[in-house]
Length: 446
Image (cartoon, rainbow, N blue to C red; front, side, top):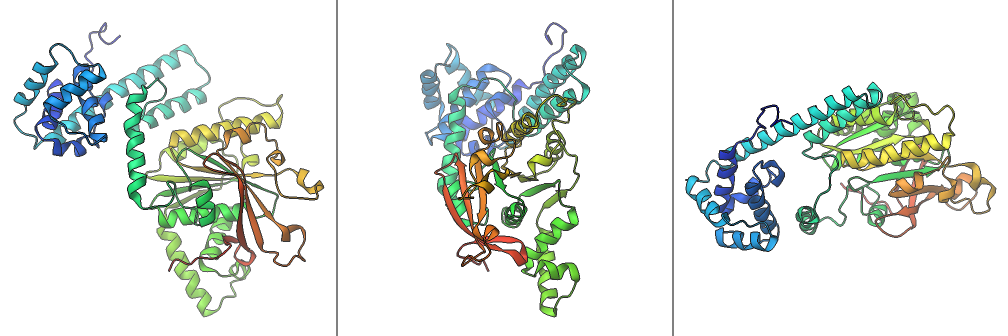
């Protein structure tokens, strides 16, 4: 289309050649270059093939020089009749690798311009074709622009060879990180070990009967991630106000009875602990929205604008609006609505590339059983929820049903579904005065 209109797609052949030439002259600069550009950023196919070959070789710690690169191009089936001559020319026209990052910045900038032009064209086509209502088109446009910001493309088939290096890199990072889990820690160590932490793109459902402490455990996790990961946490509270939510966080962090925070009857030591906890809360990047009429699209739009987003928490599923995109569910069952929402939440987790924790009510089905521990079938209006969620955690306390038990505060996090390991039961401790959960054997990080 652009060629027909006489428009030249943005690119710089000189910058592309200078980047590859620099990598061939000085392999030491390759690690810096691959942090700045990707193979698809190169407009000229010959340059793209050479860069992709070197990227793969670097990922597997292979020696990189003109001879080995040409050999690997032959193995990969991308070598041409003039490849040897072209590689030699690239090294000749690049006198030094000192400015390679400037060349790489030019290549990346031109690639972004091309992607922006493509997205703008697609959006324009969508509008003039009348493909849906305005809200639907706006959401689609935002998703495409967000993907550009994150350096990702939406859709399209990718050859497995292009994916393997990033998988290999992720495995290498995990091996050298020193952490026992690949995901973010929940602060509940036995739970971390069972689910491998909170992993990017996962939808984690925490389900329980009212009053069992769903909100509390979600806030515990949000606080731990906010304090220790350096990432931002977005909390959407459709039930509790911002003030109630922060009051709970303050009680759990300061270990001061929540009732005392309401009355203000605090000792000097409790005031000191509350002040210290407030300082800790302030330093954590936790953001709260208590709008009760939010849809998934609303949440997604807000999350896209947060830098270094690490976790999203939603309290709770059954209170959420539908798509927020003009679709009507008046004639459909609530089960279909909730199923649609859960599907959009999973898509949001993948798009934002962060774990999403969503709380959910359990139906009263367990109340009629002798064993009242939650089951997957107890999910209210479950529909496709159990299919979409990567992890489903049911909370249970014997003391909730029988206060006379030996330890009414002993709790269980029951893994009803776990894509990262086995299902099972994790023991926890419920601290009602602080409305918080802790490890069954409390560990203190001083």
